Image 1 (tube, rainbow, N blue to C red):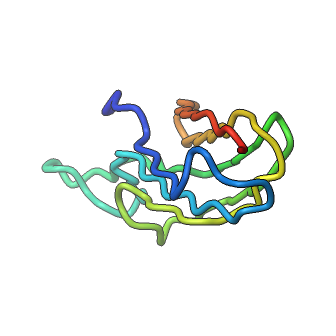
Image 2: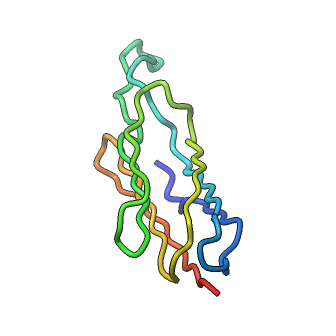
Length: 109
């Protein structure tokens, strides 16, 4: 499994109060569906990102529970209204129990 940190892009890290901030994030993950076979003809165990959350100052902004049809290296995009300065934290969990996190600071001007 790859140990790369998630890549996170924000439209503005210093938005004006109540400005809409666009968040884009991608995580490197193979997303094994459990439907492929290895070279011995045995099924490769399912291991997908099965839960994602985005919080701002520990308050839930966005939650997603992907299914097996999601592509490798899932990409997400969402927006939120910047009401105050704080920390945007994103968390991905996979079937193997591995947790990937990324966070970034936002300063409302």
